[in-house]
Structures are given as structure tokens and as C-alpha cells.
Image 1 (tube, one colour):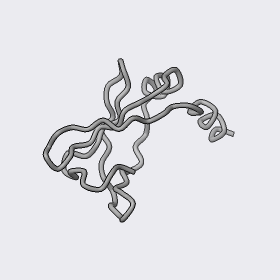
Image 2: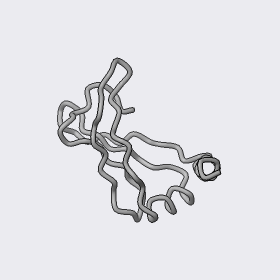
Image 3: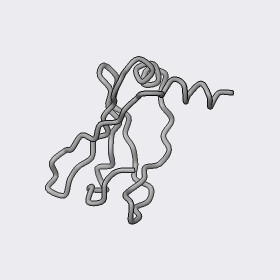
Image 4: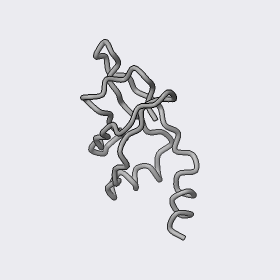
Length: 85
């Protein structure tokens, strides 16, 4: 979920160092924020997320300035492994 007030047409992007960004398309906005469509992660992004400590979700603010929202990756590998069981 990204903050209310994010510009919807540009969507959002999941960013990790050394990996091509993944575009996230907005699906629904409600009182708690806007949700993006579930987007498959490519193998390079998954590998980077397993090794990394933080990713960034970028969105555009109403003034068209790009804002980076930090995303902790603590526990990512453990959660992914649990989903595979």
C-alpha cells in the first residue's frame, strides 16, 4: 500500500540496486492508501531481495516529485521459503 495523494497514472516502481526496476500498477485506493496489482518478481529481483536489506518503492507525489518509500527486506527469505512449503 502506498500513501494517499500519490499520483496514479505513473504507477509505482520497486527498486533494488543492480536490478531493473519493476513497474507496479495501481489497483485500488481506499482510506488507508492505494494498493498495486500483484506483480510477479523476476529471478534477478528475487535474488537481490534475498541478499539485500532494503528495497525502495518509488511513487510520484502530487507536485510530481518522486518519493522513495523504504521497504525492509528483513525476513524476506524466510517468508518466501514458507510460501513454497
